[in-house]
Each structure stands twice: as structure tokens, then as C-alpha cells.
Length: 102
Image (cartoon, rainbow, N blue to C red):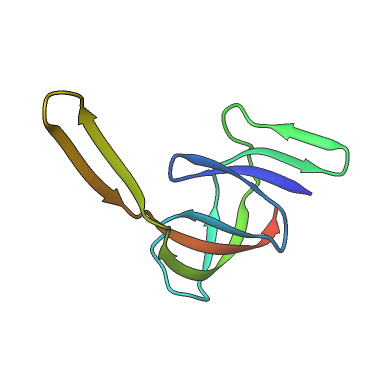
């Protein structure tokens, strides 16, 4: 059994018991969240594809952590023009454990 859901503009594959890092969701550690934007749901040999969402299916998960991803460096320059710009970014994430799909 697995599902593909959308959260924060990205798509993730979820299986029961799996821990997934999704974009920041407000909530405390141990709190349950419902991710209802399910795009595809598979159980055994049945496959349900949403147009655009699968009706009646949601991913239930528990928040297990909040954090920040490693820093990425954005460096821009233009040759021979003495233009350089260095910028860093760290994306916030929420780690969730998938409890149930259905």
C-alpha cells in the first residue's frame, strides 16, 4: 500500500511506517496531521488515480521532528564586470511518520 500526496508544492510517496521530510507544517512534536491532497492511491493490485485528487483518501501522519535542511550556496557572477553575489539558504522542514493511508 502506498500513496502519492502533495504538500507545500511538492509531491511525496508515502508508505505506512515511513518517515518523510516535508516542507514546514506548523505543529508540535507528537501531534497528528492529516494530509488530504492525495494524487494517487495503490492498495494491492488496485490503483486509483485522482483527477486531480483521489476522493475519500487521506494520509494520517505524526510529527516526529522540526528542523532545517543543510545550507545551499547560491553564487552569481558576471565575468569581467566585477559582479559577485553570494547568498545562502536553509529550508525549514517537518519530519512526519506515516501512520495510516485511507
